[in-house]
Length: 257
Image (cartoon, rainbow, N blue to C red; front, side, top):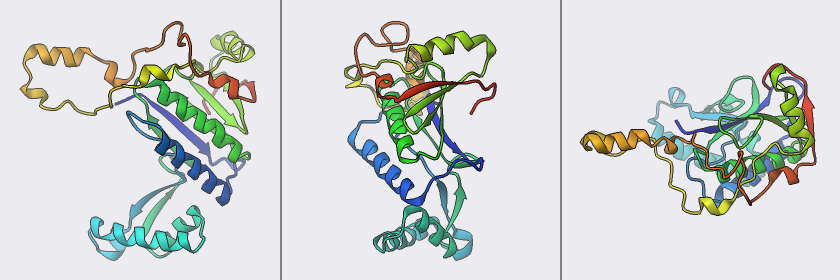
């Protein structure tokens, strides 16, 4: 599996996201997904995971989806928010909606596969930083399986970045990171102009000779865990997301957000 960035807004009774805020966030997400090249996976922040209610209508799934899409278009044209549309479609038994998106216990959640494309990692976090200003009454928790987020875990809140300390052994390391405002890696987008598209499978692998199979298995870069940075987790030049953050704060918590 390609390396991912996971993001969540927990349903903890304190986080709040209004329907109009979510519509604005969704428009921003659509812009990022449309304007940039994503080589492993796009942004996928969702408040609901949606499934066709084939048990109610006894349609085949490929027959029910066109009805759902048509009805959704009608409701959107009538001025309904995206969340209101989902609630209406569920009430009409066209869909089954799982609140919170991909993960349990959330108001919204999602993930983006970035593999070894650190520019995509930058774009995902830049989007989430901007999104946090659209939903100022919510904390967006982000977990990076790779190294773009140097602390691995952060929480975005209204343009600020909070760095949870999840290990007492790393207190001084995280404090220095926050003091120097260097939580995110510097990324040179030019390095990724011709970055290969991520693949889940290797075509005709069984037909390759032993040497070719060995070469494929030895090259782990496509899995997205090999460092592409020039020095100490940063490119020599490039975009610095740290400069776009309003403020950095330490959160003295021993549990992951």
